Length: 398
Image 1 (cartoon, rainbow, N blue to C red):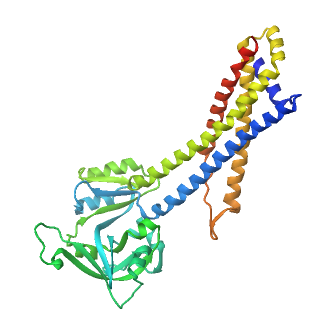
Image 2 (cartoon, one colour; image 1 turned 90 degrees about the vertical axis):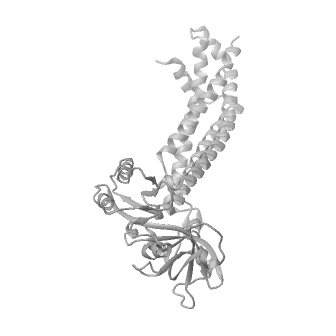
């Protein structure tokens, strides 16, 4: 039998004859429970917000995107097309043309990116389902689907035949430009749809047919800005990445969804770490109550400790009694706080108590990793606080 742990357990479950000590112990326990509860709820809420934010980019970004290692465009010949089509882990791929343009509708202008896509693009991206007004592009047509923000800036409606949308692309070259008209290639198209994903994308892209984009930019039929690739669910992402690099003889770079949104992921991870550190500081402050509670328990049970010392226990064993007592308080408080936190998160998932808008509940996500993080944090800090406070035992027995 582990005598120090047995005695610590008895101390933990028994009440003191001193009411003030019982109150201090309860305050310390409530502080741990509240710390674990708040940390878990915040991490779960942030996980929900992270998933909610990334859900918009997941609608738009492919599993892998093949980009030129140098320049804006690269060529895809028939042999390379055949290898990609026959790859066992590639479900579909789409050729894409992207370039910065100036959009002009009647008297209003705004910069944007034209994105020329082929018919396969709809199977790569969920973009078609984000079109809330009008329709998606027809093949080989001079049509444009604008982002919601671009549409507002230009005051351009769907199929507004009072005026066409003009697109201006700078011509490459050197030397002085004497006529502004010589500096741009121009094209005209009809706005047939308006999409909405998020604020950043809605003000960035104007979608058009890839043939129209090639014509505007005067590109060859085998030239593309990128290939967007959809993988099979069982595919090994790194293996497919290496295969694609091999097909293009390492003249391209292949990015996954995380790399395409590198700044967004870094921002979310940094915010998550900052939130964790802030609430860990709150827990550390709450654990000062544990230190005070154990020190008071050491002083109250000084006579009992001397009796145990006379019965043969060493000072280190008596010290471990109070270390175990503080550890039990921390672990038990952490578990209770986690149970309450899990119940609150589950209730928000099912009953949607807190709403952001009348139709959108505040997003939360129940993750095992957050349970583990909170339990390890509370337990490790609680054991450290217990060790610090149990050091007073040796001084009290002198």
